[in-house]
Image 1: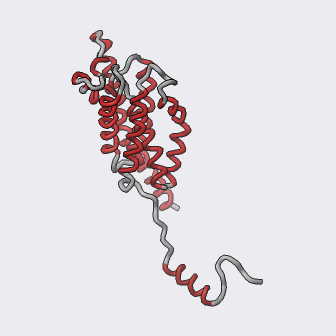
Image 2: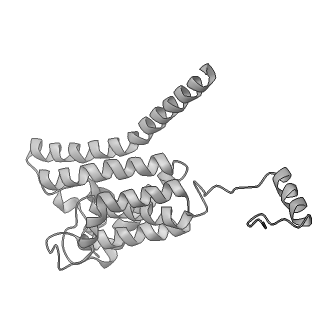
Image 3: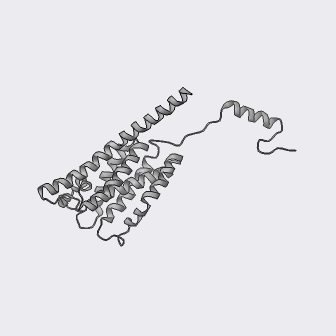
Length: 228
C-alpha cells in the first residue's frame, strides 16, 4: 500500500515538474511581448515599422521582431493566452523536438510572409499561434498516438474557430497571410518531424500467450467461437 502511494506521489511530482518546465519558454516569450508594449508606452514610440514589410529590405527585420509587436492591448491580450497555452502544450507533449519546431515555425512563417504577403506592415504573434495549433493538431493525427490524438481534439475544441482567420474576406484588417502561412508551416513540420519525438506505443504479446494460442488451435478449438 505504501509503495503504491509512493509511486502515485512520484508521478504527481513528475507531472508538476514537467509542466512547470514546459511553461518557462512560452512564459518568457509572452513576457517579452508585454515588455515591448511597455517600452512603446514609456517612450511614446510606435514599433510597427519593425514588423514585416514584404519584399522590402527594411521589412526583413520583422521576421525576427514582428511576433513581439502588437497594435494595441486588445491585440496583445488576444495573442498572449494562445501563445502561452499552445506553447506549453508543445513543450510538454513534444519536449524532445519543441525547441526545433518552435524556431522553425517562428522563422519559416515570418520568411514566407515577407516573400508572399501583401504590401503592408505585418505585426503580431498570430502566425506563430496558427503554426502551433496546426502542428499540435496534425501531429497528433499523423502519429496515431491516443494521448496526442486527444490533444488534437482539445485543440479543435479550444481553437477550432481560428479556421475563419485563414480567409481574407472574413477579417480584412488582419494579416490573414500570417495565419495561412503559419497554418501551412505547422502541417509541413508535423509531417517532417513525424518520426521524431513521442511515438505510438507498440504492443507485443507475451510468448507464453502466443504459444498457448498455437496449442489451442492444434487441439481443434477456436479462440473466437466455441462449439456446443
